[in-house]
Length: 194
Image 1: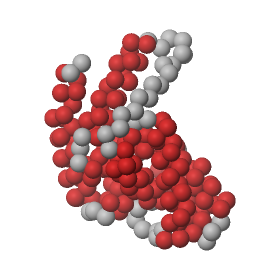
Image 2 (image 1 turned 180 degrees about the vertical axis):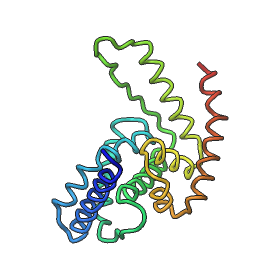
Image 3 (image 1 turned 120 degrees about the vertical axis):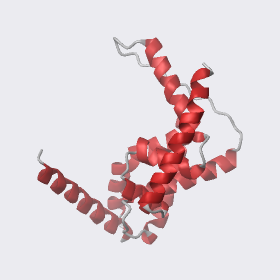
Image 4 (image 1 turned 30 degrees about the horizontal axis):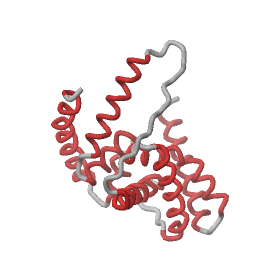
């Protein structure tokens, strides 16, 4: 695709999203259902990254969409995309979850892939590395966690993240830089503790 076609597709997608959001604000359940279908995976992935267990991530994802449905009438089109608004709700839901559960520990075992040709040892190490990074991210300040997950897990643009957090892009980049510096400090400990 050429750049003009990509920009046109992106503009069409933004217009379609805006139409769905406007219809949902007007109370159309089908429009909200379409937004749910569009963003369910991204919200779940974001929440799962924060809480680390499937059952909790599923419950919180459901809670995020319930909160969004209840608050949709107050949503305002800003520089931030609708998904950034949803992820802000998700972050707040995760904070509430952690306050409720405090130090409760959960075990969530994913069944290893049974695909032929997959090296179980390499898969286990990769899973361990992902978990080490996730645990290191959880040790960051909440604002830093939010920036790292929105930028690197959800691949949101700086403008969307800045608008969702009410920060300037410059401030956001400073937060990201400090978070990455802290992660570099934390991760060698995680890796060395193997």
